[in-house]
Image (cartoon, rainbow, N blue to C red; front, top):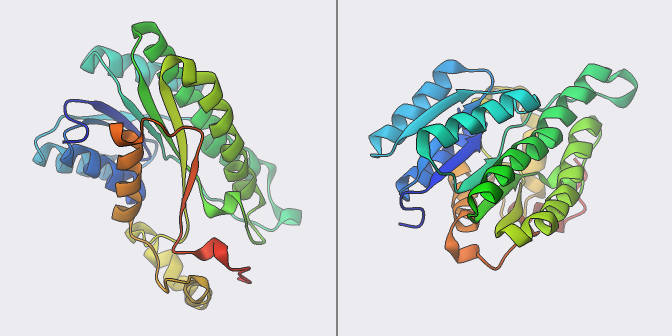
Length: 256
């Protein structure tokens, strides 16, 4: 098993891509901390799925944009497991809006969760590993919006664009401690919880799929497999990298 007896913290692991990553880790032998902020039932469902795979699950309701809450969670993980090996910064919010009408609160919330949250969690993780003298892996979950975006998502594009350079900077700062930091940037992923919203903009999604060279949306399990690679020893010589998983979407000058 690639992560035998390791402890992984996955933010936003109550559903979607985060849940897929958490389950993939559990299948490969890791105990998993499910960090989430909103849906208690989803987080508990994720925990039960992990335990059904024979691994321990810890559920932590944590706002990753709150430094005190983040530090409290990492202290609890250290006490409960006496180790931590992998951090996946997957938590994110998406609050679209045209720039002239975008509320300042929406800008702040997206930047706080999607960008600042990755900083706060990685800082707490790195402090622990530095103290115990152990290596570790950080995987940030970005988006193709960090490279190329469309109208109505200026806050999200700013956060994901910032995450690209934050990943590089963190990789430089943490290399001396044996901590690898990499970024996975998904394109259009078929997440079940978002299907109703997508169905409401069916014409838009049809146009998006036409722009994808592989002519389909990605699956959460495909993102999870890539994250597993970056969390495992197979990726020990990779740090500061961005890996895009988008079916070729960024290869075309898409017009959606």
